[in-house]
Structures are given as C-alpha cells and as structure tokens.
Length: 165
Image (cartoon, rainbow, N blue to C red; front, top):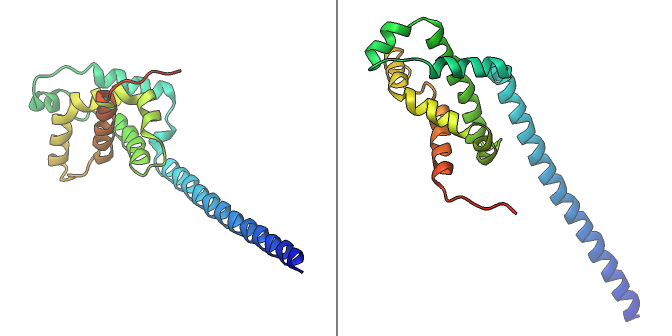
C-alpha cells in the first residue's frame, strides 16, 4: 500500500512541478513579448530610428564640422541652416536610442559598442547649444534622453576595461 501511495505522491509532485514550470515559462514569455512590443512601438513612433546609415553619417559630419566660438556665434551662423538641422536630426536619433536604453529595451553596453564615442562627443561638443535651444524654445526636456544616453556612455567609457576570452 505504501508503494502505491509513494507512486501517487510522486506523480502528483511531478504534475505540480510541470504546472509550475509551465506557469513560470508563460510569465517569462509574456514579459519578453511585452518588451518586444514596447521596443517596436518606440521604433515606429520615432522616424529618426529609421534613418539610413548615410543620413546618419551625413548628420554626424555636418555637426562635427561646425566651427563657432560661443553660443551666440553658433546661432548667428547656423540658425535655420542645414548644420542646425543636422544637429536636430542627430539629436532626435540619439533621443530615440537614449529612450530605448532608458526603458531597458536595448542594453547600454551594446549601444556603447556601436555609438558610445560619437553619442558622447557630439553631446559634449553641443551641450551649450542644446541648453540654449532648450531655453529659446521653452523646452527644458529637449533631448533629455540623448543627455541620459551621453551619461550612460560616459559611465561605460570610464569603467575599467575588461579582457575578452
């Protein structure tokens, strides 16, 4: 009698463990699907994330080639011109990437491997201009996720290097 009870108990335990494992798998899969939908939504809502490589490279080249001494000179020389539009274009692109990192929909380390130096250097080189754009447009949150992205990229740049196997 005790052998059949033990077999019954074991089969109930196995069935219970199977149900629990299935529930855990379902929860994890649902969480993954939600993150995928969120990522797709950000990408669809941000047309700048659909830019071609040549468009991004052109914007980077334009932004990096601007020469000015002080914010006032920047706005005198570039306000409403292609160079300022390139800064806005690049800012919107990095804004979308920064949002993905902020929401943890993309790993910051992966972004750093692709965009770390350029996202950080273009932010650093244009911080004063962006601050003035925020002030002039009464938009204190303009490019806030690009700013967040730059901070994350700086943290990774300053972190100790690791060796790969």
